[in-house]
Length: 121
Image (cartoon, rainbow, N blue to C red):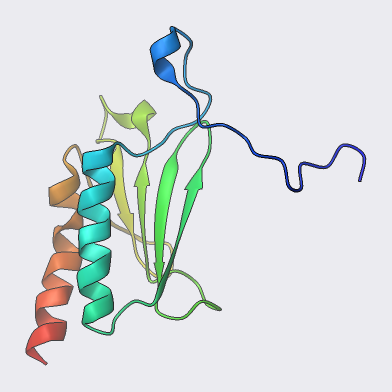
């Protein structure tokens, strides 16, 4: 296993030390909004599992109906797009862009509407 990172703990970067962060992450309030939606979708029977991915360019939250399939929705944060079309993007099940924007709440709106339909049904 020479050169393998298996079992190694990699610390989350701390931007307060004056160094640029080596990976993008979610702030506490952002993650709270995302997990709040996730919890309500689980309660409605729409989602059952999730995954998070953190790279140097983006952070993503993927929600799954079943663990063995493609994500039903993916929320991505790309700070490099902050001054362009907005750093938040909502992707659909087939990778299509459903919504882009500068505010997380606006980008989550299509999933909120889907939740209202799921509860009414």
